[in-house]
Amino acid sequence: MDYLFIILGLVFLVLGGDWLLKSAVGMSLRLNVSKIVIGMTVVSFATSAPELIVSVKSAMAGFPDIALGNVVGSNIANIGLILGIVMIISKMKVDESFFKTDWPAMIVSSLLLYGMLLFDGQVSRIDGIILFVLLIAFVVYLIKSQKNKNQEIEIPLEETMKMYQVVGFLVIGGAALYGGSELLIKGAVNVAQTFGVSDRVIAVTVVAIGTSIPELAASLIAAIKKESSISIGNVIGSNILNILSVLGLSAIIHPIKLVDNRLLSFDILWMLGFAFILLPLVYLPQKGFLDRKAGIILLASYILFVYLTFA
Image 1 (cartoon, rainbow, N blue to C red):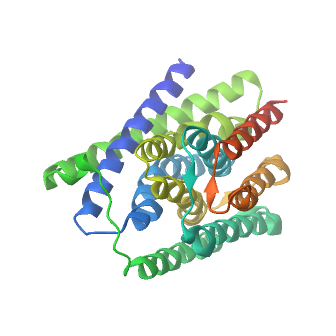
Image 2: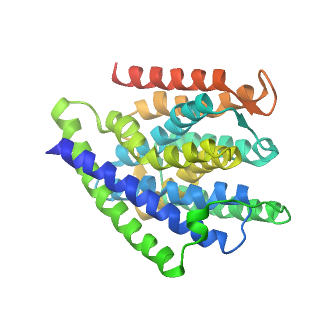
């Protein structure tokens, strides 16, 4: 039954994330928002919704390792698994914003999280407020820096949606995310207890991959349509939002204390490693591109991470 809960939870999270994504993009298109801003904010917020719901509910239910491990594991999966697969499928051109804002913001937020946990072993309410304020500042800066760029995005389905459809997808998407998170957390905790593994192990692998599926779907579709700026922007934007928004809001609602030290001594170091390695991969062998070799390196590294997590 626990496995059924996990499967059903993941299905509802995927469907809910997809419906929420349709609603969010459909609304943003009516506001003439630029392509890269959609990728870094609207799409990223929508695809990060599963992580937010799962982390908030886990923290409130007394499972802080699931709340924290979900975010750390999702950030690792976003780069190692998702970008790895996408780059193997299609060579990806990296926008100038990657060097100026996206990558630096991801590194700063990742290091900030590491520093908070290293300082007192928790993400307190004050930490959460700091993270969320930084999120607001980042989004405002991003929108201001892109407002003069005339970019368009072609997503025919969302562009032809009526307002009642946008609202409908928003409502059913939110309901599916809520129900899916309930089932996933319950199933994951029970499986962890049955096999004698920690909540952390389940969180950084099964739960993290499950909540990252919307990012995978959105990025694969973008890569297939040759919309690489949305793909890379979505992944990096989601990593930033996972820390600033997901952990920020979760900590404001309920402080997240570190229980399993392996999250600090192992998992988060892998998260930092994946974040840092993107820069040299973008420069080699051709600056401004992520190719198939880079994808293989990232995917192989992610497989190694999962193996060592269970070892």
